Image (tube, rainbow over all chains, first blue to last red; front, side, top):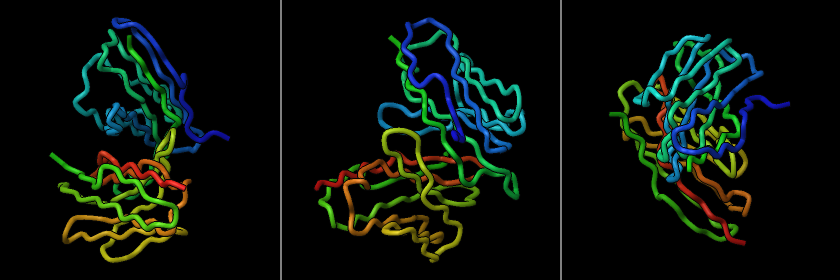
Length: 116
Length: 108
């Protein structure tokens, strides 16, 4: 029974294309995240949503647009893909905590995006 | 800017050895420090530390936090090949900031 799932697992596309990655969690968590892990394995937060509301938006090009139709889903749309967007994108979710900050996060399996 | 630094970046050991991984941090509003293990896919949670000096233990893995000196260590004793992975340290200051990870390779 998958807790945090992402589709697709692999995505190979040409520069300039627009693509979306979907994420769903069945843990009943309120907060969801998108992370980017580059070739050096550095995991960096991109966005965080709490109950469908954007709460963290790191310095990410505005070609990246997250959308949360409900608190169980957080999708990532990327416009005009560039070579530097090639990375593994991880979705994560976390349960509500006192003070509202994340503690334990549960990660999805990742989507490996390759831009040619 | 918040910073999380892990060392060493990588190490190779033989089965049965003990490894010690380091994580130092500088963040504005420290709430907790977390360790994750990443094998081929998603990072999986190991420990969350909030208080100094209290060791957390799970089997052959243990971790401790020093909030005065701003670091944490993760120990793995009697290493096995299944311990080969990237170990990630993350600090929670209302968002998780990850270090670059330590790649551990355990040889049979």
